[in-house]
Amino acid sequence: MFLRRSRVATRAIALALLGVAACQHYVPATVNDLERMNRVRVRLSEPLEVELMDLTANNATLLDGEVVRWDDESLILSVWWVEAMGGLEFRGVGETVEVPRDQIAELEERKISVFQTVGLAALLVAGMVLIGSAFSGAGSSGEDGEDPPPQ
Image (cartoon, rainbow, N blue to C red; front, top):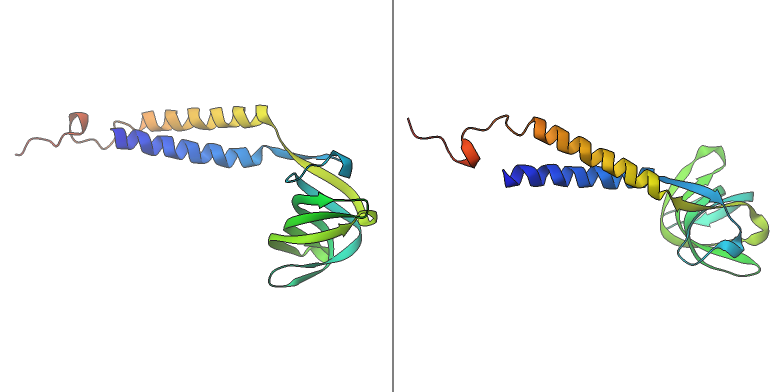
């Protein structure tokens, strides 16, 4: 019985964590609003060549990553995602990329919506509990997890 409940709880937690990722959105920002480790999306006014671990992404127009630092001339990112002209997409592993500030057309900061996240997590957990309780009696062969008496 305990094992069955822990499986339901584990599934509920996994689905809730999956839901947390869905409750994010990007809001307009300026470089002066940023702090280190903020997750940002940068749209470029001019395509940029981005060196990733295994390849070079030519004509990159969008970068998604974390802020490392910035100054008057550039924004330094740890890049996780790159989109290039023509729709090509590349996955990064945190490579450091320097973006000249005059090439930043649009800057957005990722935000987590607390209310949506809590609401979605509560719905997922409630759904998993209902599903688990509906099937809790199915397939049991004895009471309280005991084996049935021998024939």
